Image (cartoon, rainbow, N blue to C red; front, side):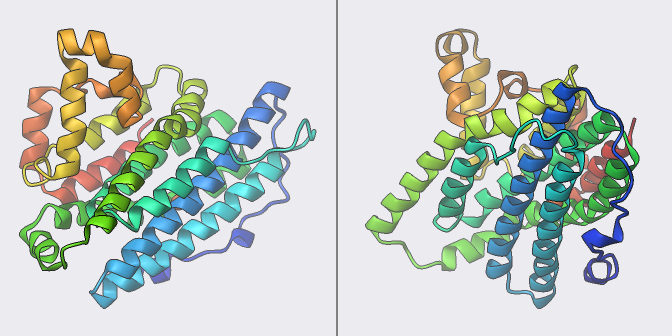
Length: 316
Ligand SMILES: [Fe+2]
Ligand SMILES: [Fe+2]
């Protein structure tokens, strides 16, 4: 993996930025410029999370891998910014980062410094699956021109490495080695625990509007049937419910809210409030996989699951 990280580096200037964008309707031009602006914010957030993971890693190879991911995400942010400028042919308006994204980012960065690292990893894996399997692919199909295809091709190559390591880390966070690491941590004073709880609540509060603004709303335009979105969430659910991972506190919390949501009475009474708590669209809170799919996924290795997720993004 580390050899691949070194070998497959590239620069934004390797792309040919002189190609003309295809003709777009005013509505589509505005939407595309805004998506790329927000994408650049998501990429920076991903970079921030990899920086945290790098600082926690002890294996020097893993440190170097995460270091290269930080560089990758900064490059993706730059490319997304340049794509936003590239499609901004008519200057209909100025594009700024969606404010929900900015609020979520601040809350999240604060939270990852206070919460156990498996939570940060659950979010980065979720975010990258959504980005790779659903959003970037649909966005590229929607923009559908040479510039976007060339940029996404290179970005996707990097993202494949990220997903492989995200899954690898999911496995680690479900393992006895992580239990041992947790047990060896000094007990946090009450003040720190209160701060961690406050950070978790603040970040959950901002997660809903963030997911809606940067994932669900754009996906509704670029993938109206929501096929890729549901596909990505199905993979997220299957991963979170694997034996060893499912009984961790955070997946358990999400699943608790989810089962209340799907309960015929509680769901009817408190459905919208529950959806608000975990910040997800009702469409993806219901169970998206069949029993057969669950049995099959549980029998697969994490590596095989990662490979299958990666294959899904290239499927038409
Ligand atoms: Fe990225
Ligand atoms: Fe990534």
